[in-house]
Image 1 (tube, rainbow, N blue to C red):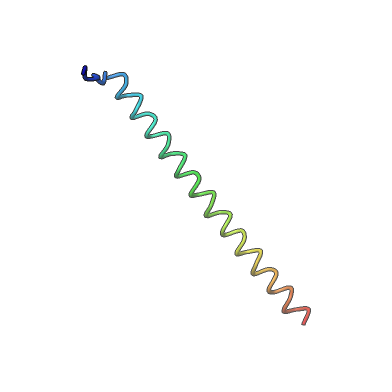
Image 2 (cartoon, one colour):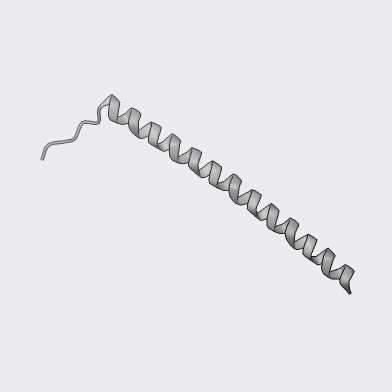
Length: 54
């Protein structure tokens, strides 16, 4: 059975793909954090509004 030889080009492409996936992951985590913070802010605002109405 012949062995596949990974060329430098293939290795470079794999490294670029890995880096791209890491970058996407970092951006997704930042967006998720911003959404969570926004939701917390809205929850606090709703509690304040509800408390003022009582």
